[in-house]
Image (tube, rainbow, N blue to C red; front, side):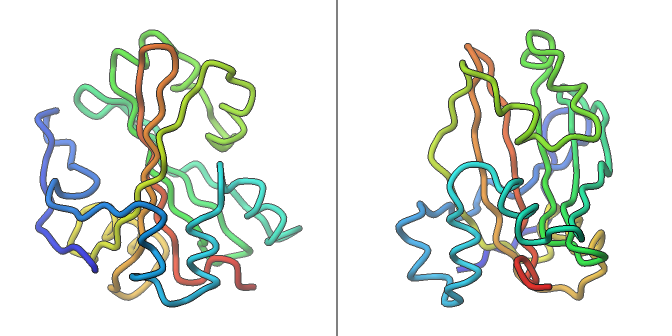
Length: 183
């Protein structure tokens, strides 16, 4: 079930919320009821971080681009895409609260690496179970991902990961493009 909502803003100086509070988050077990495409569902359910799987599937056509790193109100925001050739497969949006950035400054200095590569050796990192939502292009994050990829408006799946490192937290929103896994 796709979620539609007008873009919302956080109380952090106009930084838009990635998805509206009304979004219907689903656990992994519910995806069979909502995503009929088995291949796409398999990509959504990839355990852990997607970087290695995308690299392997795209092979020598793999590309990761750092699109945006900036302060946005009380958060540090980072956006990347991962592509196979010129086709965007995944758009990732990371939100790091100021307190987390203060105690784990390395999170704001990942640069040209993927988040997966940056956190691979972090032994104190915990990740909550994945949550999934299908959202319409009138939600801020999906609209941003579609515009970046040059795609026509359509609902897209978003996978949310809530991380905790020591007592600090941060969030990753991965937007799965329709072409993920296809060359």
